[in-house]
Length: 550
Image (cartoon, rainbow, N blue to C red; front, side, top):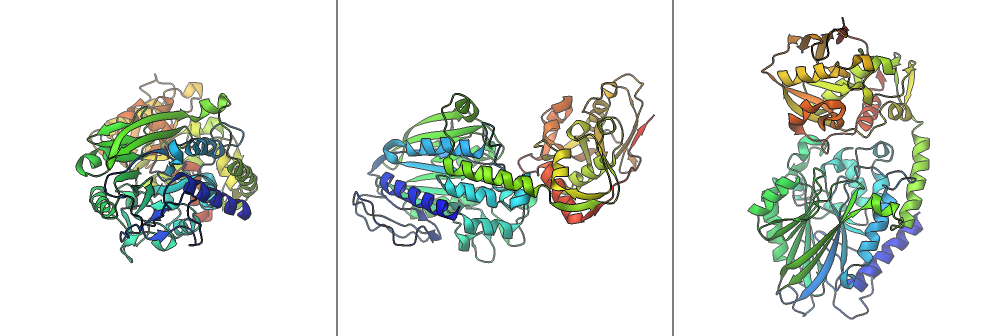
């Protein structure tokens, strides 16, 4: 695997020499070992650092006189998922498409970039600690990747290890190590910004993480999260001082936040990536900035071709590539090296899922007829873990998302057991709901008991009684929260899953609630449960009278 990786790095280096008039120019670090040969076309090369080292070339760079075209292929946002090697949507097919678009860029001037949230929140991440994604990204054409919030899910030390192993450059203008006043991970190769010369034009790259990263993930004690506008103003000025004529922001901000930011901060020419998985069929234009949003994970790849003249973006063209449709039509060849890695990791994952992560001192009941009609001790434990994870008052989990239909006898718990119980890629979301909305949700949850519907609510922080023989919509007899009667006008913080927040199982009431922590910020339920078992070592959930069937 190591030999294959070294070969791919060298291949990308050669492609970059052939396609651009400059080497990677990274703030705070340089690429290569200093032994690289210059391009065959004789162009001078440049390495730009955070201090703004000037180029040795005398070709008009930085004075706005040069013209060029370049392609930005984006983005990533994989959440630690690899996809299934037997399905269309997987990392090998994704990067097969990315590499094709990258290598066919105008005049060879291509950049493949990511916008973060690549390492974590999947079951794979709990097994491989993000290393699986770093290894595959190393094989890809990716040059730069923004730091997202989920990079820190396993803690800052885990992320540092992945940064050190990365052959691409992690960028962030607003995740600062207070001990060094530099970007987090600078010593491992991360940077606040980077500048590359393309046909005499200086192209600058930087990244931004969400402002609440320190609240939604485990950044540790030494990471300061700068407010994005403040950080953007500073890094744009630094990029301009370093000679950048075009500034590209790899954004891990929600699209409305990014639009507000560029309206306030001048000097950003292109924004790619979105924190909240928004897909726009065409880029959004705000003042003189082009913003491209293509969702998350493997669904789409964005292709943004831009023409630069007189030191600014003169024109652009955009194409949104639907990966599944292209694979179905036979128009995508999987990335060979990444496909090999994917299969290797799948085999290893299959073995690792058998690992014992803890034990249960009591039988765990996840029978279908139980989780869809009455209190389940596993339902109690899971909803408690969800509420604790996002610091919510109460939690609701639909019984239909709890699977495997069996009683697990007291004893060892394996990763596979948790994945079998929680097979769906649902993530934890935190909402603010009124007492009326909470009651409406519970009433809806017990409205189809006779049909064994999966909407039935397992709960934490709530106790309720219902009459299954009463008319649907009038079955609740009593609801308490924290031991007190439900107050219809009170506001409660609720943990639930993103399937229900999107109106799944008919929970339309949740689509109207205020989102306090989105699915993108929350943990995948199976990964959360695996980590909770590992941390507790022994669990022993009991029935507590949370649900009373009259």
